[in-house]
Length: 286
Image (cartoon, rainbow, N blue to C red; front, side, top):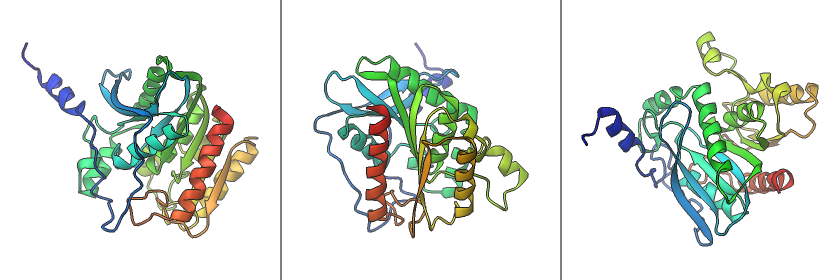
């Protein structure tokens, strides 16, 4: 049988995920945390979104039959690379099955790209409905695994993926908890109408729709997410009666403070925030 162009594209896209660190963001002096895979099962699987795309995802879970609570992992703009894979293994060490879909691979794997303008083009092509469809595919696939607890599913994400957490928790009743790491909450003050439209729905407008509590973890020195937008989100949560959702701000911490392969890494804030994230999931999913 001869390969059609579409089959060739799928074969290339469905290849093994990039196992290194995103070169566009890797700090020269970085010493990233590396979590060993002993006692875990790690693999790349294929998800089946409604649009028919073969979507690769990295999975890390404890060895054994389970069943284990599931956490969907939404990456930063650099896609599923070594840092995201390590986060999945960290979650697996805590007793969770972590599933990280490669949301951007329909166009290109951004982890392999050095040019930031190209990376932003790739990320911009992943629209809201596509991303929510990919989250749904991850939830559906996970619910069919014998080792998974389909009644105990959550989501976490960083930067771009932090915004996805708020959106997904407003969309899917299957989710029981979310942890959003410095995801945008509202448009920038100088955003154009096109930028505002492209980013919808914004978390500040989704507070009443949240179907699961969300813990937000934000940096007080994040120049891209001003504290005014954090306060606006807090007020929206309060008005909506979302008493189980809350936002923790780390004074002096920049955007990307948890990313241990980048210059923005802030160990004290990252360690404390990780502890809070795990405790939040433990309380909601175990």
